[in-house]
Image 1 (spheres, rainbow, N blue to C red):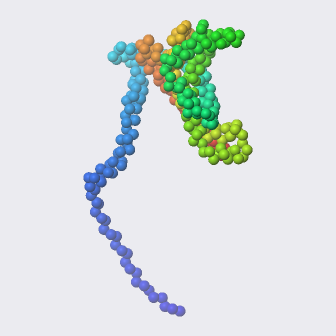
Image 2: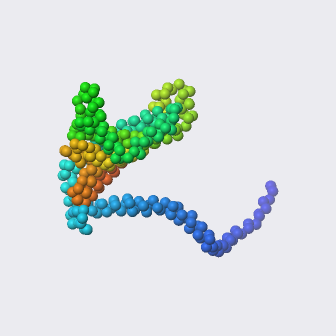
Image 3: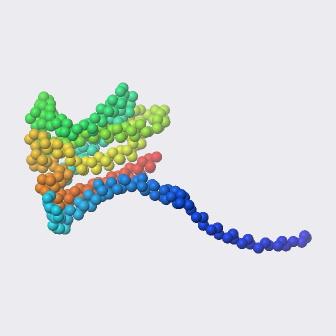
Length: 330
């Protein structure tokens, strides 16, 4: 057997002495500060403007809602939650809320459906496609005064084009101003005429972003036009459709211009003779600027804000469920 030679064990190396910290120059310190601070400076204009035009009015409205504050008063009288207590028992407020939801449903649901169909049509090989797209968007950029005049001629009770057409067809004319459901339909048509083109272009942009390879693969598999639309195009439009639905919901619950213009038609009044098409924002406007009760109008504004939050949460839950179902289908 060979003898084992013991090798000497070298002592562990002593750790190197720490280097003294390098002193940064002023230029280096400014460069590091620029990297850390510059992104916040770039986005700060949005937050500053939001704080001035969004957050401060929201908080000040909540403050005013706790006062009995008339329009020309410098300071109001603190009354706590009395405005909200009165609001919950106000039949006119609940009537305006029901009218708002009714008009919102009559406008938003057909609006999204028509926008998708028009976008699918514009996505085909149409002649002068750019002109058609501009034509679809024209109602959105039209003057609101022009919109009031047009629909005043359409839905006039005695000399309106719609009632004249109904009489030619042998049908009874409709009292568009005084009938509750008819007035909601007329206002919803105004909303659809103005906003459908805007949503159409959003959906069209999403359709054109769909990879052509997926459409061509569906064609190779023998899928027809309807099958490709419902099985390929529509599922890929889910995020865009959710965005359109959410924005339509927020805008529909704050509807003011259309019922206000409809109130200016001959034979009508502000919100209707029996408040049959008075919306929450129209009631807010009347309370604040006609009745000059800023405290009560502020309470209405905050109740509308809470209603919008509830609908936004519902949309969020619906969005998460649709997204989960979409992942499961894949």
